[in-house]
Length: 265
Image 1 (cartoon, rainbow, N blue to C red):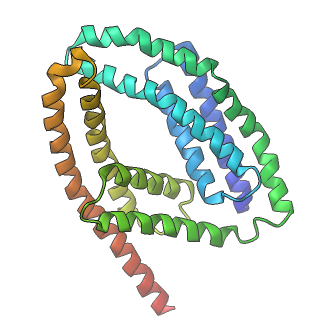
Image 2: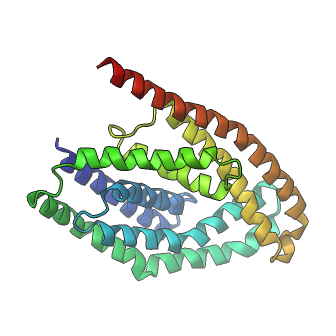
Image 3: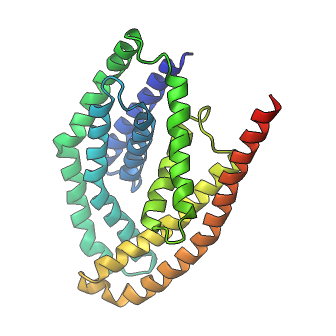
């Protein structure tokens, strides 16, 4: 299978996953439908990002980005409701459940979501056109270059003593999903991938509490939880720092391995 064929097949699998997630969201059958839809969108964007400049990529990526932006508030609300239920705070959780259901319905009715499916239906033909026009001849080298640059941006951010956890979280996610999209072109080792997952989880726990604290400053029924969430956020960030050191080492070790291998050729 050629690289272009593999990319088209991957997009078709993600399109199928998106249709399934939308159907589950329409049926209200489980609490993970929106999460799974967002994961499929994120993976689609990770597949497309290194292909910028190729036929139809910008339009499809913009459509995917719009769906990501559209669904973020509802997903944040889902996570908050789950947290409140775990703490036994059923009244504030229930008061938000109706708002969440309305958000789901708004997403399903939105032309933004339909536009993504329309773009997905048209995109394989765009890629085939780019292939016929010779735009994909150096695609292997382009992917190697762009995934390499993405890794370097992460390494630079990790090396900054004043690193911003928000930016680190974004770069970690981009590197992880880029590696999943193009494992044969990724400069990140297996240990590095495991470290990325660990850091993403740790920073995700911190980010959730950071967001909840912001909400608690505006929503009166959450204010009694604010100090506890602040404490948990500090603890989560401290734990994340240790995992960031492991990630730094894993990324550096891979770079050394590549130089040693190149020297032996």
